[in-house]
Length: 248
Image (tube, rainbow, N blue to C red):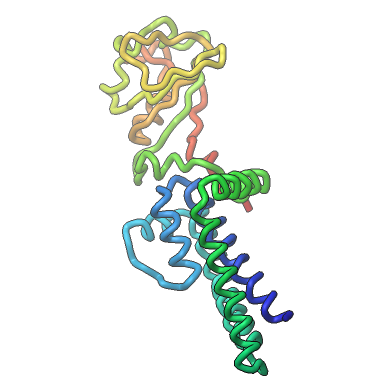
C-alpha cells in the first residue's frame, strides 16, 4: 500500500509543480497559454523550440523557473516510474487490478478537479500569493511587455519644483520630438494618469514614466533649464527594468 500512496502523492505533486511553474512564468509577463506550454515542456523534458522558448532563455527569472522545472521533472518522472513498478511488483492479478482501479479513480478525480474553475481559481490564488510572499518572482516584466531591446529602456523621472517642465503641457514640451513616449504620470497626490494626452500639464512632484532610446533618456536626464531645449531634468532617471530583478 505504501508504494501506491507514494505513486499517487508523486502524481499530485507533479501537477502542483507544473501549475506553480506556469503561474511563475505567467507572472513574469508570458501569456497564460505560453506559460503553461513552457512549464509542461520543461517538466517532461520535451524541449520544444518556439518563439516563447526564446523569450524564456533570454530572461533570468524565466530561466531559473525552467531550470527548476527540468530538475524537479527529472526527479519526479523517475519517482513515478519507480513507484509504479513497486506498486505492482509481487501483486497477483486481483491485487494488481484493485490498485489499478484505485489509480484510475484518483487520476479521474484529479482531472475533474482541474476542470473546476472555482477549485483551480483557489489553487492559482494560493500559489500566486505564496510566490509573491516568498519573493520567488515579481510580476510583471516590463521589458517583455514593452518588447524592450538593446538601445531602448523605460525611465522614471521625478519632476522637481525648478524643473523646466513645471507648468507646461506635454504638447508644449513635445517629448516625442526627442524620440520619447510618456507612458504615464504619477501625480504628487498619488493618482495616476495613464497614456496622458498632449494637454496634460506637468506639476512639481509629478513622476513621468517615459519610454524611448537610452541615449534620449540620458539627454533628458542631463538637460538643464537654461539649455536650448528649455527642458530641465535634474532629477535622477531610474531604469524600471533594473527594479524588476530576479529574487534569489
